[in-house]
Length: 115
Image 1: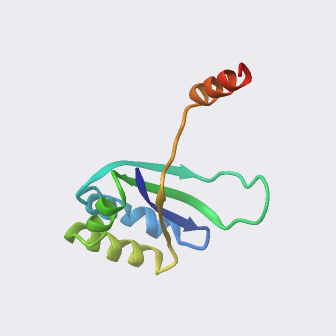
Image 2 (image 1 turned 120 degrees about the horizontal axis):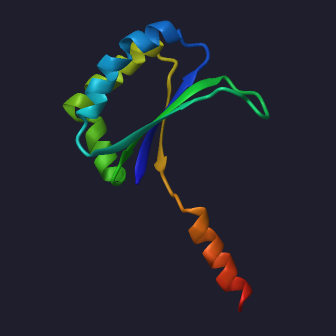
């Protein structure tokens, strides 16, 4: 999986952002190849300095699918909307998502300790 990640800093006007979010979401959900989306509302900073209030991620099958989607009509529209909503302060990242279950991880530790 490959992700488009949006970091929303605390400096963004969340009232304006939330008001325009449905229009952005409609555009992004029309992007070809979108597999899933997720949202994290940051409610505490446990360590270090942070200016992040929200994190959104949009998953695609692979990097090529994401890149084609970004330059598609809906992708370009979504990009324009998010920059307007955040006045250019959004942080956009892409990266490969790698996940594993703790059950699978522990099963490998058990088999390694037997060797």
